[in-house]
Length: 77
Figure (cartoon, rainbow, N blue to C red):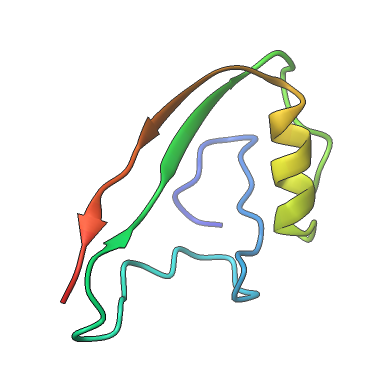
């Protein structure tokens, strides 16, 4: 994907595409929370390709995480 650092990959999201879907709560639905996390891993890289399921990335990340930072913004329309 364009714009990613060398060695980086973008796996598909829960919608099946390889992109960020954005904050898009339905109008009048109230506030939605969006969780962004940065993980410090104990390995140089995860042994995955860009076609792996998001659940596999989460599993492998969880079991290789040394530290994690989280930001949870709230957005509503």
